[in-house]
Image (cartoon, rainbow, N blue to C red; front, side, top):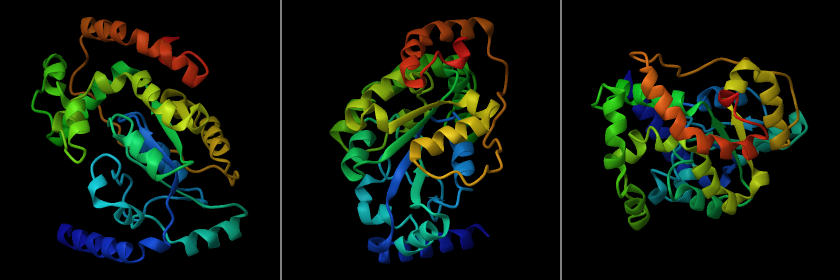
Length: 284
């Protein structure tokens, strides 16, 4: 079964590359943050007839992991222009392709590459309680086999050492990959304000929408409305909202560690207010 799926994907990619010039490029991207509800939002938006997800899978990871493959490879992942135009005529508005690759927010070169390749693109960012995100990311990487330290405290202690020089390496060798930068940045990837501040000069404040994922899960209709307004897409009813990729922590977070992390994140959370238009929900 797995071999058949790989063969089907390979065939689809080959067909996509052959017709790449006739395919649409994304007009918006969900760029992160990891473990913040990106899959849930992606699947909710995919139910809108004018929002076109990639043909093969959710995250293409072109601007972080596969930039050396070239733009034709990237275009091959998206629907044909003819089909998008047909949907636009049927539903009374232009169709918009999109993808969701949560590493884009954190990769030091992804923002520059996106801005150069997709002028006018809009970015959607989800953020959550950074303490919860860091703990959830550790559990996620542990379950997938990318983390070998089963104790969260040990993994957090190792983070600075594991990530030392990673940004510099990725900038010096643009097509390089760094395992720990992608899989072990628990605290660093939870400092959302640093990553948003890096994107702002490239895209401008008006083309970046930052959403509190706790509000998305508590009031999905209101947040969905806000996303459609940001994208300038007509409202055609509500999708079925479901929570995807949730993962329980293997053990409770020690109270002392939680307090310490919350203190470390406080200045970064304070800087988020201007992006959210209010204080983050987890700081209230």
